[in-house]
Image 1 (cartoon, rainbow, N blue to C red):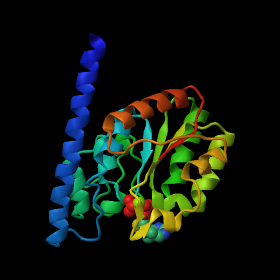
Image 2 (image 1 turned 180 degrees about the vertical axis):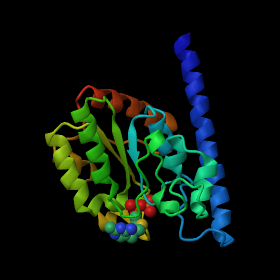
Image 3 (image 1 turned 135 degrees about the horizontal axis):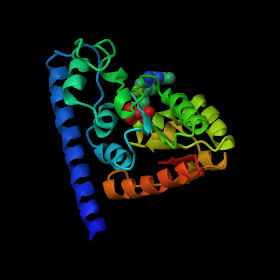
Length: 236
Ligand SMILES: Cc1ncc(C[n+]2csc(CCOP(=O)(O)OP(=O)(O)O)c2C)c(N)n1
Ligand SMILES: [Mg+2]
């Protein structure tokens, strides 16, 4: 009985968060198209189920690192719309006092260590956060969001190697939307994507990023295992 009620609340929260991300992005796009927003922005529309399914399985203390397409991760981890919009518009009230903009929003209070304009750049930060959690015994997990475009970046493999050797509580979450800018994934990433993690002895899983419940239940399972010291993991 309690379980069913808890599930209903969780399903409703995930639905609301996905709708909130879509609403945020539609407004952000309007600001961008009407040239009110300085700089560039990348929409998270269509990927909502990934950020929401993952963040629903995390506590506020668990950490995430994000990408150049980071508004969805930020909202899913609990950020406040007003501070986000202020950041996009370069206002002092923004998360980074308006100095970062769309691709540099960080929300430390909710465990979001920041968006990152460097493709693959956040792998080092997420792995470092997991190393810190392990040393401090905080029981926190970190999730590294990255796109398929980062599959050719060296830092991903350097950090996976360390994470596997030191059994760090980090989950590498590849948001494979089949393109890195205008290039198809098969034209930029050789071989089997999952085999990359297997080479380091890291368990890897494939999940449908359009299915919020599937993403959530896989993340819950991996977070639980990572907290018990069985990390790292990768999913695509
Ligand atoms: C190290 C680095 N190289 C190149 C770029 C330019 N760049 C910005 S976004 C992007 C494509 C990223 O593709 P992907 O990781 O699949 O993310 P998506 O845009 O598909 O969400 C590239 C190459 C960059 N920001 N950083
Ligand atoms: Mg991509």
